[in-house]
Length: 116
Image 1 (cartoon, rainbow, N blue to C red):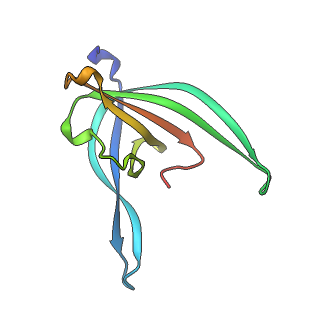
Image 2 (cartoon, helix red, strand yellow; image 1 turned 180 degrees about the vertical axis):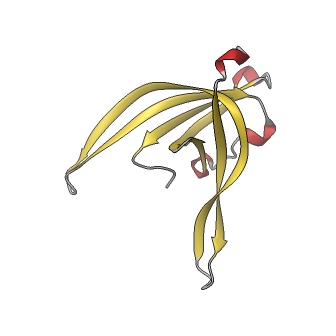
Image 3 (cartoon, rainbow, N blue to C red; image 1 turned 30 degrees about the vertical axis):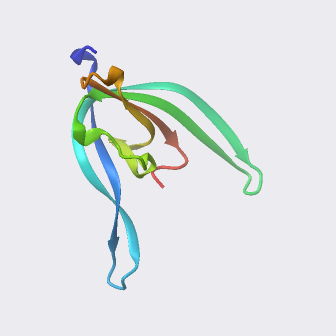
């Protein structure tokens, strides 16, 4: 991986829950780290939800960062996301490339789910 390709600043977040004043659980997000990354769009899809007559669109991305043990999501990867400015990327998979502890790749979707 060429470090010169890491030109976008992202923040990796993990879902966490807190309690409100009434004891109800509230989903919130905790920052894990802010790092330089390469964000590449891969493909896009659109679906029509017939019951709501709404078009949902989703774009898949591949996000590459330098290796850090803090950035490897646990098994429940749906509880992780990436922020790039105001954009939200939901992490669908991640891996340590060649198990070499040099690069992590995140497969992400951007679109209608927005970290929910």
